[in-house]
Length: 462
Image 1: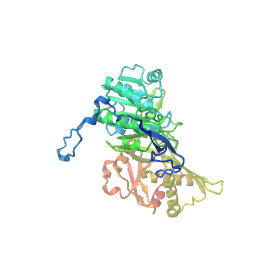
Image 2: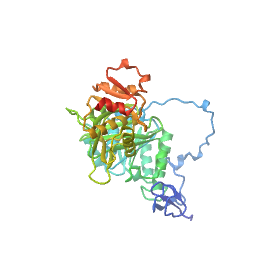
Image 3: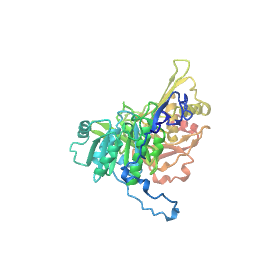
Image 4: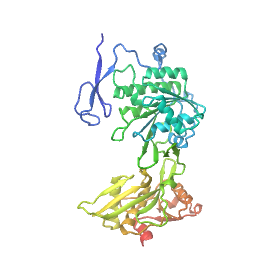
């Protein structure tokens, strides 16, 4: 009888070691190594097909000249969800492996079940290892009252061998796994959710997707740090990684592409969580802007771009005298370190004494913005709150602020101006370096070109 082979895996990053270690050399985490069986005695080579149909007898691949490879562009599968199509880069690519992560209860399973119920012309197999058939049917009736729109099949199973047997009989066009942490393979003697099981199950699904050109969606859990649970190699194995984000206190959800081999990794989809499921938000600018009748101090509007989408977001700032010895600095939806940099620019270049004042910054709607084009709007909001002078709610901003106080140019300025004009804004502040390549006759909105932050303050606050 052969000896059982074991190894030690870091439960945080998936690093493998032949012996136990207190500190992981890869991620520096302590006490995360767990012993796991890496090979079952006398186990055959794991494969998604049956042993009689093993691909091990096929001819080995030989290198080919890239010019001799025949390539025919495959048409993507279009879903009824335009937000999902945008984030995926134009639709679902046949044979792709897509991983969706997010906090518990954020709406991952709801999004995938809606996709399964509404995907016309394609047979969908929804595999669940967390819910029963009755629970899924109850949720499906809440999402789709008639349940006649698509061809959706439900399978409650956790063994990959049984799942592939049902897939071979049903021959689905799309497979959804909810979730990858609940699956287990008989070729690995470890508990479901362990590093070895997650890696092996994903590898089997990856081979199945590539050999049959069947798209596979994987729903993944996340850790308390917001990272997708399981080994980091899981994100490298899949073709696309989507992050489903949102605040429980807001009804809006953000679907963000973290990695995408078939499209842009900076696309963004916005949904609204309702009692009947997730609703697509086609015009996010209208929901991200507050409806107010009179101007308020500390509130400005900035034009930002996420992927190919232009949005107007409301930036809010509150500046007050510190009641304690150390002033507080807090930012929601914005990088705190960049906010501190902008405060230092205002101190050094603008002459505003903010060192002993509390500063709070918020991006409304519960979304997070990393576009530097909202710098100028954020700076204007901070000074507006500090001086208690409101900025006109018909004014928009789209520029980056440099360390020397200069107003730097941003990309795709025409799209930002067009979005502000479409939503009825009367004035927009941009960098004077953007004006060189801009056709001012195209726009009816008043365009104010500035080079330094002092000029902006002169326009706004006299």
